[in-house]
Image 1 (cartoon, rainbow, N blue to C red):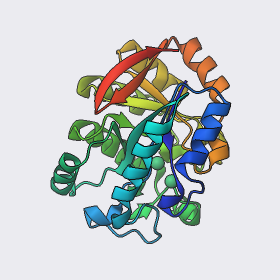
Image 2: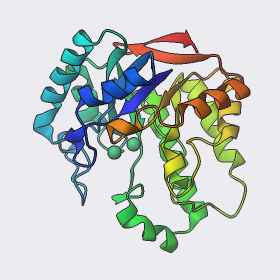
Image 3: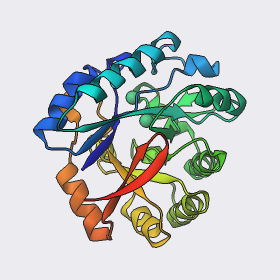
Length: 265
Ligand SMILES: [Zn+2]
Ligand SMILES: [Zn+2]
C-alpha cells in the first residue's frame, strides 16, 4: 500500500521527523510513502488565525530533508509531496510558486471557508451557526473549483466538511455525483483518507458512494493516513484496502515528478 499523506513536525501541529515516519512505514511493510506537509500559507500571503502550516522559510529545508531520506531509504520508496490549500484569489501566486519547486505530487485541500478553519476543533462550534445546506453548497463548489484549477494531482480528504458530523437535512448524493464527474472531467485523482475514522464523524473520507461513482467514471485514487505523528502512518489501512477491493479498485495512483503511474495492490 501507499501512504501519501504524511505531515511532519514542521507544520506546527504535528510531531515527528520524516525519518521517524519512515520507521513506521517499514514496520507495516508499506511499498511507498509520501510527505505532504502543509505548504506555507505565508507564501500565498494568507494569515490564518492559528499557525497551521510550515513557515515560509522552512519549505526548502523540508524539501532537502525529504530528498535525503529518499536517497537513503532502501525498503520503502519515498516521495516528495505537499498539501496546498486551495484559496480562490491566490492562483497567480500559486502558479509561480509551483513552477519553482519540483514536487512528485501536489495534494489540493480545502481547510478554510472565508477565513474560517472549519477543520480545526477550536472553531467547530461555528457549524451550529451555519445553514448546513448552504455550507455544503459552498464547500463542494470550492472542491470543484480546486479540481478545475489544474494545480493539483490529488484532492485531499474530499468530503472533509463532514468532519464534526454536521450534515445537511437532505440527501448529499448530488454532491457526490458531481464531485466524481468533475474529478473525471479534470483527470484529477483523489484519496481514501483514513483520518476521518479518528475524527468525530468516525468514518473515512470520502463516503463509500463517492468511491463507487468515481471508479465507474475511471477516476484514480491514492491512499493516505493524514498522519500527524509517526504512530499514525498507515492507520486503518487493512480496512481501507478491504474497502477499496470491495468497491472494485485494483490499482493505486503513484506519482513521480507530477506524472502518474498506476500500481496494483
Ligand atoms: Zn495538519
Ligand atoms: Zn488536510
